[in-house]
Amino acid sequence: MPTPHISANPGDFAPAVLMPGDPKRAERMAAAILDDAKLVTQVRAISGFTGTYNVPGPFQGRPLSIMASGMGMPSIAIYATELFSIYGVERIVRVGTAGGISPKVQVGDVIIGTGAHTTSSMNELRIPGTHFSATADFAMAAAAWAAAAGDPKVKAGPIISSDHFYFKIPGQFDAMTTHGVLGVEMEAASLYGVAAEFGKGALTVLTVSDHLADHTHDMSAEERETRFTDALRLAAAAAFA
Ligand code: HPA
Image 1 (tube, protein in one colour):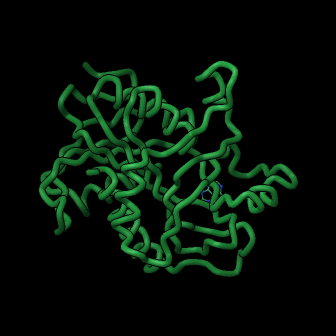
Image 2 (cartoon, helix red, strand yellow):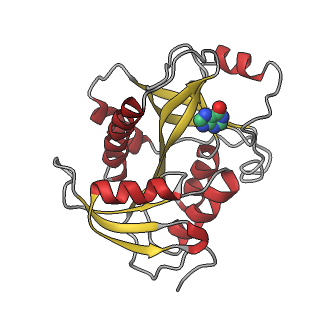
Image 3 (cartoon, protein in one colour):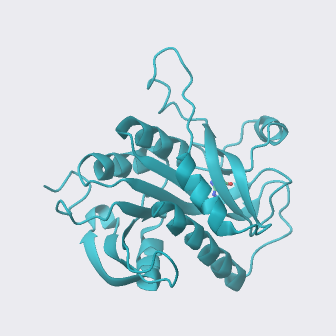
């Protein structure tokens, strides 16, 4: 039965889902890494595809779905909830971009988000009387880390999921830097909360697209694509973990 936001039928999704924010990116990813990709949903132009992972290696031939999340925590929570609760999805890996915060990361690096601080209240009421700790699935993070095979441009650590892209709270990013936060994005904390709610797995793999402390270095289109391909490989390893 289709859900309010996904027009697919039961069985249309693989247990492993890669989730970029941008529906056009989902389309390009499906064209690049899936054989026999079938469009399974397109409600609100949020395209979802299911096919067979075609990248040579240990996971080639495995079923994989790719669907966009849209931007922000409420949006990804809607899709993750429906995928986990109705469509039998077991693991979602968000693949996106982040703004670098820590001096330990540079533009072009890949961040495996092991935990996500947040400015959002979405997880606040999950466990009454506590502040929810939004963490990635350990086995999935470990699989992504193993797939990185010591690449010094891949970093694992905490990120922050922010409700705001433009508004900055004075001092907040300095404090984040002090506390070892690697980068900022807008979805992971809510995805991790939903995965915990349904006893499923989630991870976030991010390419650093810009750096809040250094606006001088920008990625060429080619570099952007190469780094994204690297990030995708790690994300797939986690999704199949
Ligand atoms: N803020 C939030 N999300 C982002 C950013 C940012 O600066 N850069 C890339 N994704």
